[in-house]
Every structure is written in structure tokens, then in C-alpha cells.
Length: 410
Ligand SMILES: Cc1ncc(COP(=O)(O)O)c(C=O)c1O
Image 1: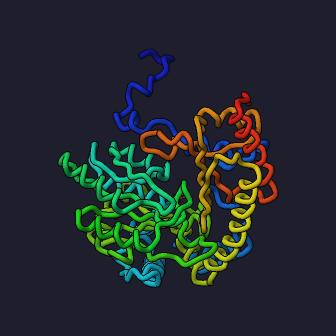
Image 2: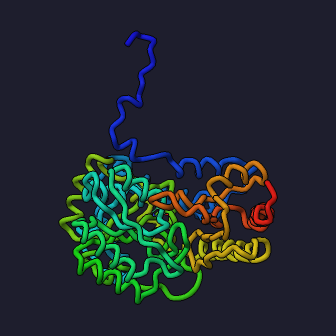
Image 3: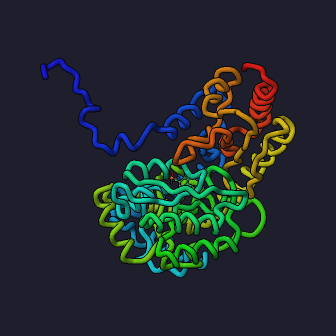
């Protein structure tokens, strides 16, 4: 290679890169940055929920009280007092937890990454919902995991369907490494698994010696109704609980955690040494101060008010403007509604057309399927778009869809 020749990077890539496919996450985040587009695509919090003045004060307080220690490296597992708070919070959610059962991570997705790093060999099978959280699918793919899908209905994963997928795998001498679930206000469908199903799912998982990874990212954002129990509270020995402060504090701080049996937590901490050594020290102190002053709970109350109004605005607009043949979920919390379009509409093909013709974006169904099916679906995120633009965005999208259904070209 001469001095001026360009390196052909792709010839050097590991086989992992080929399994990753392309990044739908990055595409969605980009759309949210284009000011002329009303984007229901990215799953972002409304910046209005952040308690900015309080956060400013807290960072000053942390630097005043902790000084330079707040700027140094911290323990890989997380700083002690913050882990104590996590253990208390988990215990309060009916999963009695010791500090040594908690590992702080750099956001929720880093927790998924660590779990895959520790549990997956190339070719291992993970059971996921159809549809599933796209970033988790991306992580599993990047560790060269394979998927077994269980279709979801309006109450999430159906236990008999799960049992039969495990049975089929067993017939092929395959033992899944884990089941990945977002049981409350699932990303992307918005649906919540009710208590009876939760009990059956953990029972089936334990009987078959398959751990469950419970991703509770949206659980605290409940607008109405009673919260069903955490899967981790139903079977602390077989459920690995992951969570994040991205929706209850802010995603810029990059703090999440894993709660699970101690030996697993120790191994995850070992893996974390090669991931990022430790999570943000100043951020953990700030999160702890934010939490102990009652501000997480205050932010949750504010978020619930804002997101519930936005959810209502979206559902009202869907009722008004979407074609009769379309169906959608009515989430009781979280960020997302999931649309099922009748007929032959391909949402993946529609997305670029919709951005050009109507300046509206959404998450196309195939992004959320391990096998890239689901083209008749779309995810609409109501959390980020300003409330006053929701109706207009849905009106434009509805008009486009209605036109296509009667044979017009957009
Ligand atoms: C289901 C689910 N899990 C985890 C996360 C992770 O968030 P973060 O890595 O920002 O903490 C998200 C964020 O959108 C999510 O939707």
C-alpha cells in the first residue's frame, strides 16, 4: 500500500460487523434533528421534563461537597451509596435486593450489551418478542446471536406461544440462552403484560432453565391503572432485571443498572472492565442527590402529566384522521403507539416517501423485527413531538395513508 492509498477498512472487519446489518437507530435519531420534519420516529424524552434548575444546583452541590473525587474514576460496580439507593429502590419494588446484586451501567443499552457479552457465544439463540426493541436486537446481532421469535398480542407475550417456541427449540436440541422482554409499555408496541401472564412466563422460563432478561425502561411512566409486579419480584433467581435513568432523570447522564443474582453480577462487572471500566462518577453522585431529594419522583409526576396529554392527543388524532382499516394500541404509559395497517402497505418503502411528501417520519415495522418482517406496522412515538404538532403530524400521515388505500400515488 502506497502512502496515499486509502485503507480498505471493510476488508479488515470482523464477521460481527456483517451480522450487525445497518443502523436503524442512527437513522431515527437523524430524522429527529431535521427541523421541518414532524418526527414520530425516535424514542426520545421531551426535554421539557428535565428539571433544569434543580440539576444545575445539584451538579454545583456535588462538586462543592465531593470536590475532585467526583471527577475521578469510580468502582466498576458503581459507587457504594448509589448502589445502596438502587438496592433500596428494587427492594421497594418487591424484589428484595442486596447492594452486591446491583451493577451500575452506562445506560440501559450498555446493560443489554454486558449481558450479551457474558451469555452469548456466536450462534446462541435468544427468544425475543415479535416486535422487539430495535437496539436490543442490534446488540444481540452484534454478538452473533440467533433469534427465536414469539409473536406478541395486545397483552404482550403469550405464555403458551412461548412454551411452544421453547419446545420446538428443544426438539432441535437448542437451549435458548435467555428470553428478552420489555414487560411494561413495550418498545415498540406500547403493550403491557398483565400479572397472570407474567406469572406463567416466569414459571415456563424457570421450568426450562432459561433466564429472563426484564427490561423495565418505561415502567415508571404509568399514566393510569395498576402496575403489575416486576418479573424480578416473581422469580429473583431466574430474572435479570435491567433498568435506566434515561426516562426518569435524563439520557445524557448515561446511567442504567442490572439487578440479578450475585455471581452473575460479579461476572458482568468483570466484563464491564473491558467495556468502560466504570460509569460516570459525577453522574452517579448527581443522580443520587437527585433521587434522595425526591426529584426523581417529582420528574416522574411531571413526565406522566406531559406524556399522558401527548398520548391523548395522538390517540384522538388517530381516531380522527387514520383510515378505518388501520388498528392501533392504546398504551397506558411509556412513549409508543403501534399501528397495524391493513392491506399491502409497506411501511419501510413508505417512510422516505412520507418524509418527502408530508414531512412526517415514523418507525417502520421491519426495524423492530429480528427477521425484518412486519412491514404492515409502524411505531409512532408521541413523547418528543411538541404537543401542538401531534394532530398536524397525524393528519398528514393519515391523509397519505388514506390516499394510498384508495390507490393514489403519494
Ligand atoms: C426498551 C428500552 N430499553 C433500554 C433503553 C435504553 O436506554 P439508555 O441506554 O438510553 O439508558 C431504551 C431506550 O430507548 C428502551 O426503549
